[in-house]
Amino acid sequence: MDIIEKRNTHGIVLSIDRSLDRTNAGDLDKALAMHFDDGKMDAIWLDVSGVQSVDSAGLTLWLKWHRKSLNVGRRFAIVCANSFHRKLLEITRLDQEIVIFDRPGGTRILPTFGRDTARRDLLDDLEIVL
Image (cartoon, rainbow, N blue to C red):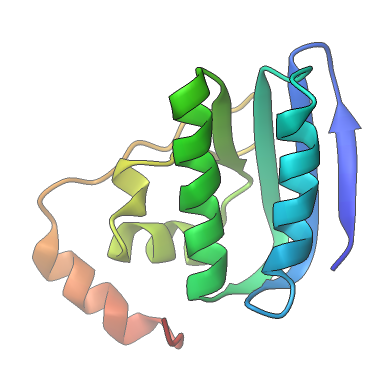
């Protein structure tokens, strides 16, 4: 997994490519920890535009850093989420917890509430194993 870092005055954007799964989630976890622990960044944005697949290890990592950021008053968001990422987050209901943007500095994608029948339909559309 390649992790590309782009800093600005308020935070950092970490861009990742390929898949995010149990074989490489540790690499991203280390990169997030390094930037989180230095205390210099108010926000960490995770650009997932290059991510083609995500397994439960990837989802767990996203949730871990979202909650860790909340606990210390920092911001964590997923940016450049395509329809696959949004469906995955919606099915797992993580869209109701993790902040998602369509692009850096873009529009926040709001969670969908009360769509359990749509959630079941989406499960049929995705070819993933969690």
